[in-house]
Image: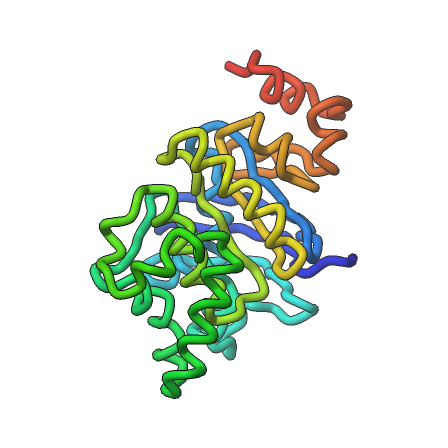
Length: 251
């Protein structure tokens, strides 16, 4: 299995605000790692370090390293656009572009200069099938994606991410805006997708973390409190804070 990513002594600053403190954390290949913890603890901040989304805003800075297959992705020589292609991201609310279902999924492929119509059709269908939404949209490929249900939109966004063959997918509270049935479909999809990609998921939902994660990391005040196999975190945590958080007694 091995580590796909290794966060090593990572600090992160929003201007003068010290948001992450000496975080060291392995991310196992083809597994789901959940980041849990109270609001404002640094979960999403850490998630956005992996695809360097913080680079889009001024005065943010990293200290430490994130190794991907041994290479520091925070280094100055890294192709950030290439990095983001390899690190798909799915947000809390579905974010389909205001265009057709087909064009949503083909968007990243066209950016990568894929022009052949047959190849585009093949890749779009493959991604929609991987995202378990093909049967629901195959007769609506030319229709505006914003006419889909919330759960369908989120799976479409996952298909758009998958179309460019990412190595890692980052999920940021990606079921919290969905109904229980749609959430279950996304969870089942994530479990299926880990055969092909490494998944890091931020969630406030303890039951979801327990159901889908192979490994879980608890964060608090920008620091990593505890990391272990999910079963251990939820049944035999070493840290009292972890025990209080996962049993609902925290705070």
